[in-house]
Image (cartoon, rainbow, N blue to C red; front, side, top):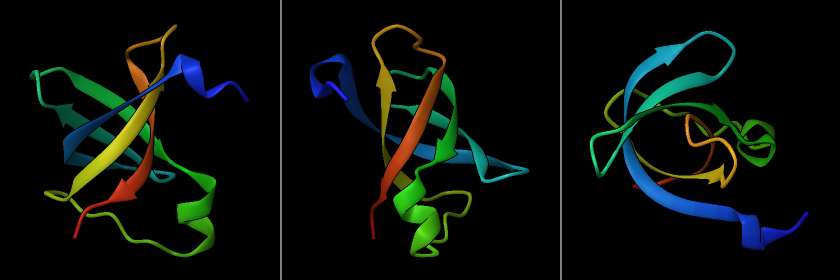
Length: 72
């Protein structure tokens, strides 16, 4: 996997959807549909509405992303 094509941004979870999918509002006001990364699923990291998260999305599709970290 080439990390140069990934961008990491911070946002806030505004809605929880089925199958560990979330709507996240990033700093510039854009709303992105995100899923939980495999490592976070493996370690049972719980993400709730209102949590601040780090997410990465591909340079090719700015409307979908993957949550990789939950801030405390």
